[in-house]
Length: 261
Length: 252
Image: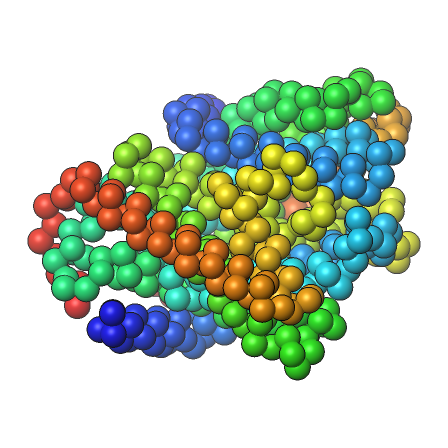
């Protein structure tokens, strides 16, 4: 366990360095993503300027939720963007080069790529949270836990979706669309959803664990709230590891001779 | 003739990629489901009209393929150097290729996506005939978006990475186009700014027809789309010439 954690730390550090290595590209991608998120929020600002609230949700709640999801998504793509390529890696037999290594192949695959634009998401997320007015002293730690757990659930769900390639073959387009659903359903007021759709958002598409519960750790910090967020993250991470391992038993080698350094 | 052949091949390729088409359709339905719930939560009086409005604007937003990526890759890899030697305009072929793919996506979204919107709303827009005008105009708007995307792709000559430019232009389209809510409910100053951009004609111009149908509005949108198409095509030709000069100076 300690070895795995040390390996994870080394991978995360390498990803951090990789994402900022090309300084020009890094700055451009991060800055434009920051602008992109802020410009996009103008739409919600116009919406709440006209309608004021949606079943108790006001513009500051949207800012908090958007901020939490943006920060979680940023953390996910900075440290684990490789998960988004998993279908291709499985189908093209590229897992071979990861399986030959002594450490967890899943950890290596998800940490194989870092997306510099994620830094723009993280910064815009933090700015939005600050503007929401919910960031009191008591909310800092729960909010950090909330956004980290949101990132873990995003990562785990992406892995789960792409693992379907072990059984269903090349369905990259559908898997990408399903991954986009995760974010899509996470950035709307939770009060909009009800019944079966709300149930689905805490199970099939865990938007509840990506945004609805984490944002509550910010709006109304509580021990139970944080425990639910952490529990959801552990559950989805465990599920992703289990399904990936089951999928590996069906994996067909691509007969690759390459070695990853 | 060559352009027709490219258009046909691109359309057949898009038809063959069924997973992509299905994914896009599911995404369209998911968006419509969320927004129909949102509008019901805001007020039942908005539910039908505003959901239909979004159905039309999303036809443009989700139907247009990202042709800027192919242009950017050709520029970055240097492939453009041998592609421009062919007896066909490079940018023209990219736009036509995109139009072929767009036509297939649009047909699928306009048929099944609109059917899904009908199911969600439980009724057609107040003036059902408005769809017969709004949908063809949305197709015109999509073609205009392809020209814009070609311009974004050419920005790779100077920036290398065109994706960030696309993100910003896409978000400007959403805001100044009135993707989610009609420009008529925007604050006056923002509505005025939006009207000075091509985005207003591309989304709001088509979507407003299902809210308040008037054939004169359809004609106005068609004229504005055509005027912006001429302007942006002129700009595209200018930028393309400049980029080819840059390519020659740098040795291809």
